[in-house]
Picture 1: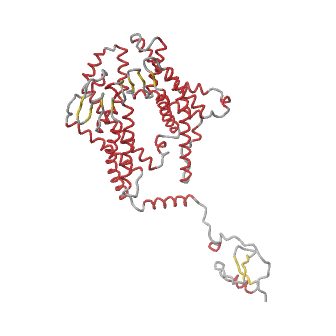
Picture 2: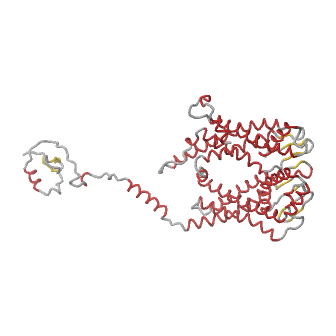
Picture 3: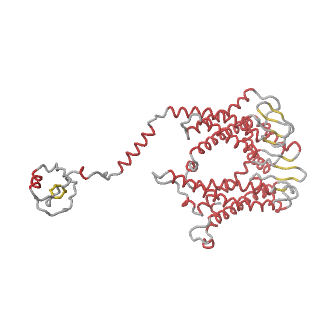
Length: 511
């Protein structure tokens, strides 16, 4: 894809009115068009292979039907649902399919940033010793530019997706144009913004674009949700290993053939991401449903007739679950405890009462993210009893908020108390003193002082103010020690010795 976009980049830039770089919207439009073209080409190839191996009529009539099916798969990759006339709605789509457009959009965002020379507008860091106000202004300018770049990629991408939704409609399935516009806009904005922010530097530099307190909450949320998702995925993989025989029996019953079997295995791998989120909902407590009136949760399993997808063969049998399996409900609390420590380490606060509150805020954000993932992982599979498949979004969000929030609040309070109590009170002052000493050592120029404090060698001759003959008082002054000049009275003025660099005082009065 990068090679194709580099060929597009060879278009004369004088056409766009800028000899140095293209405008950002133009680069975004070219990146969006290239992403859609490559993605449709990949899906059309896979659909064509399936059309050759499958019975005629499965993908429509001829090559136009193959292209419409590829368009529908492209929309499904962005989680845009379909309406079946008289058969309800299809919204249970494989989240793994989003990897294709997400990767292409990320690469397109990197190309757009390079094509528009955004790296020159996004300095990675300021010189050492820059003021805090300057750093905040730099961070704000970077965030604004990242948002502009994301919109420049997402706007044309969503408009082209609307055209695809209209082209991909047929008499069997009708894509939702509104869902296509919204899903393409959000995915392109997210992937493009992350790609443009990546041009600043490493991933750690991207996170540092946020202020310290929001950064602690974001990182803590990421840690908590990642741990729960990992635990859910391990639970699903364990069930697949235990029930591999039933999964293989269901696959043999379908008799898909060689090509069909490969495509079926690909579909199951793509749905594995949905299964991982369902595993997270299971360990959180609410569980998930496979149709109306069903439930798979740590409290018990109740199933009915399920679709003939071999991956669903890993579901447990109806009835009570083993006691040891109920221990998984402790995993969200463990994830919350780890997230609370992360929040306290990133942004410790001298107020011991505030740390638990920020830990609970991390639980709120974790619950929101978990609820969003639960909503994306489920959806209807037509009408009747299959209209409810997957976990309940609000139940998952509520459970994760309480479990992670309470554990994160306690651990954040304890970790913050530990950090504050074991940090010497003089450490901040010592750091400031060390910085000042380093600056003083780096500055080799002598500090200004009074001229009377200078040594004889450093004394600068003072110009002669008056040319008079020295009197007896002056002769007496020359006889004194040269290193201890006499203080003049109010009516005396300093004057230089013409032959040396010594200060003498002569009486201006004449006898």
